[in-house]
Length: 483
Image (cartoon, rainbow, N blue to C red; front, side, top):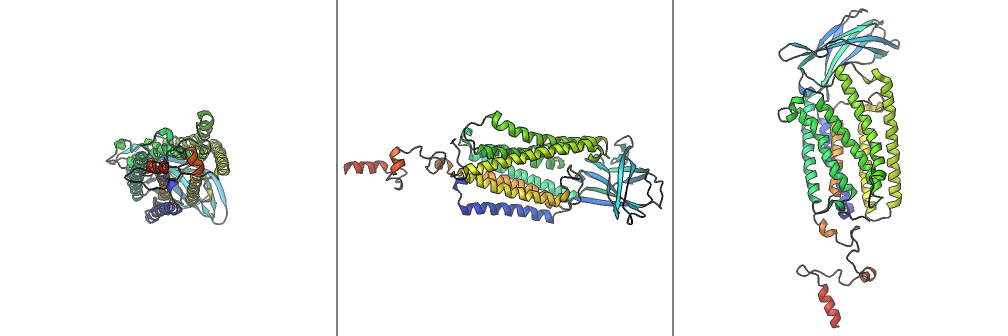
């Protein structure tokens, strides 16, 4: 067995394990409670237009409310009300034109896109017409926007059209900034304490979990921190980039890196805990990095693809390029299925081979139990946020009416942070770890200092007390020789 720096996990009793899980659930519950009591995520303002049953629709010009950086993004949606939509189901295609102009603080109008964009949209009505996303701006560069919307080739007679502006609530943005800042501070403290606890041990003696925690904790800093600091414009050096798409995309990049590193951590630990000694890069790490790398590449490609297209066309949606999107979606699903099957295979083999090994099975059981709890809670959060169509219409991040408050945001961030804090606690050495690492009950160092006779027959001086910090073994041997 490879030498290991001791873990606090080995010294915890059953009562301590229960206490660890209780503290985890209490901290997670507090974040959920704050989120439930927090503000709504989306702020809406409606503008209704009476069209007097006209078939020839003239372009409609709509001015947004004053905006700030804390509004983050801007959507314009439309709900069409037909004269006979409640009687029959209707599905028809029409052409929508959009022109977006920005209004600066001095009142001057600036062209965001100096051309009129047009896209074919489908109007679907079954009792009530479905909402149509007219335009989406992923970052705000002006204090106000004017959107001119036109409709062509719409054959149905329209009774009314309801336009709605949707932005992030500034109160939610402030809540997001402060909580992400708190998580950054907590993560920095946990990272420093974890590194400090391992300073007396050579890195060669670290367990695979301890090595991975030294990677995941710094990545958690990036996961928590960038977008919160970018919004806090007076205090952050990247404030000149706030009115740009770059900080938001960089934040998405760091989050995807952290989440994929967490996926890679599970693969490496469940395999590495079974394979002791040297782990070759070609046979051990390469297949895992390849599988997780494909997932990361798919996520980043979809995000960049969406961002770049929206920069050039505010009407862009992934449905516009359905063929390529469906291909990328199938690719992502196949790779995700491969990852899940591979992970289940490693878990089953590890549990079957190591269940009777002391200490090692403890590491395996604790990680499996905590990870299972985190995955179950994550699935519940995703279901509550997106509903049953989590892998369909909301596959790419899109405005979702299921996201009514900040509970989902805080619960997900709190879940990942407290998960890593708990792992860092149990994987870090205790205060007396350097002394305990030399005791016989340590799995890595057992029987190293025992003689053959002591191992077979036991020793008479093992439980004799210490006097003035020194063992009385020498005195005991002298007494035995005199007899």
